[in-house]
Image: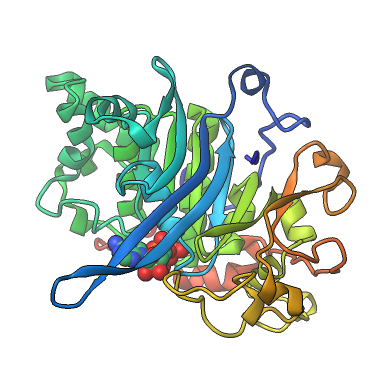
Length: 402
Ligand SMILES: Nc1ncnc2c1ncn2[C@@H]1O[C@H](COP(=O)(O)OP(=O)(O)OP(=O)(O)O)[C@@H](O)[C@H]1O
């Protein structure tokens, strides 16, 4: 299958404007010559369920079950879906924090060329990790509270023997400035910072080795709305300045709309829809995407979605329903949906793709994608929530606001 920054300016950030980073044909000139920066083919991560006195394997949690996606250099691809759909496991498996059960992960390393991460030994992974970094949801959990911020940021540079002495201290000061903090913050401890500032520290650490790509796993989910917008602006600014590529994992479709070029929708370990962001939001082709869009909060009642909210819960990937995994929550379901598993297939041009993106395939796994007339969503800009944001502006421990 093919699919595939601004520092703080005050209490409220300007609405992030998504820029188109790809050519109309869907690929940058360099991309056409060398292929995407990251390509994932039929990725699987199954966890064994053990039971009984002998702890025998009695089942499998198919957390990721055949995911394919690609990310071009300089673009942002988002993975969305409810909690438990396999988003984090996909990201963690790509970077080998989890061992893949099957499939291919190809990362185009600047010196090594295309590297198959699924079979890479630890020496190869040591060369890949500086180029392919990870940002976690909870910055505090991923930062050692006993280390000063300077040491937290310097650690990757020390471990990889890149810099020492004054050059190391200078680089840490530079990284702090890049993420909108001050060089003197290096001597403080993470607990002295607000949530948004701690996420900036996590970003500075991820940038230390000058990566090509960052996998961002729910990087703003734990933050207040106003701080979310600031961190998103920072990520976009860094992307522009440093030529970064992001795989952005989020359950929040209002955040994703502002940052991503392309969206991959996951449900119970599988991809159910992939499309350019604008196409996906204006005309979803999968009922699950429509339901996720219906849940986007709307400050203006005139824009409220007419669809019913999503009912029920995400089924367990240890025991998914027959046929289409979404059929028992889908208001359009027919007999075929419980009998047959829909393949992820390309929708011909003109049936769900805007003219601008006509050359980039839209993929959907729904038997009735061509006949359903689904409703998109108007995603409010952060400014629409300005009143809420001002209330939520986040103080630091020393009483400052960022
Ligand atoms: N180590 C593990 N052992 C067994 N099951 C696991 C393990 N890690 C994840 N899972 C299961 O895999 C499924 C996917 O989890 P995952 O965390 O990837 O989903 P997610 O979409 O990222 O949701 P969330 O945002 O809540 O993390 C869930 O059913 C989860 O319980």
